[in-house]
Image 1 (cartoon, rainbow, N blue to C red):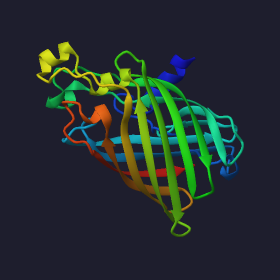
Image 2: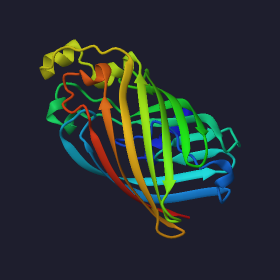
Image 3: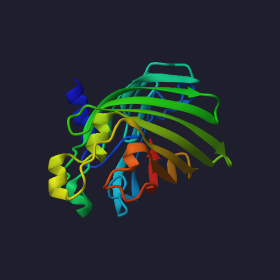
Length: 262
């Protein structure tokens, strides 16, 4: 079953490069207007070629989001999962998410490090909505990395304010912890990789891999169309930031998305 659901998620999210969010962002059950709430659109991103790169690339992906009142959700942002709670202040459940691939061919600075393929992660999440403007989020995800034994745990908070009936702003702060297997896959250099790439051998330990600050402007153009624009800046910390092929410890991503609600 996991394999079937994972293939569906990979296909829908353009598996070669797409990545779901570290934490889950769901509309609380009482505020869902329909039994099935669906939107479709596209997002453009200006982002580093890989985490820690000082080179940038422009990418575009389809956006989709489906959330059912029974608790199920399927989203390019949230992944595929189920929220077991009907309490508007508490959300908890299980999900499948994606960790994006890192292709060696994307940058000359990755030469000799090999590819890290897109991974399907199994995990769980817990969110607590303090009120309509403030919320806390956490997640655990397992299955990323070269040997698919990478583990990540994320904690964060979000603040939202409405400017008027059509516009709102939000800010978020998230910290991500990763185990040794994940850190080695994405930031380490093995002896064989060192011999080919020229980078010194590097074996990072588990710890906080990054802290991310984000800001988003959400404009409801009308009852169906929305425009979402924002940016995020991460700070690679601990052993992740000390990796020999990390050239930018504070990578910035800028994005803009247009969606249509059915």
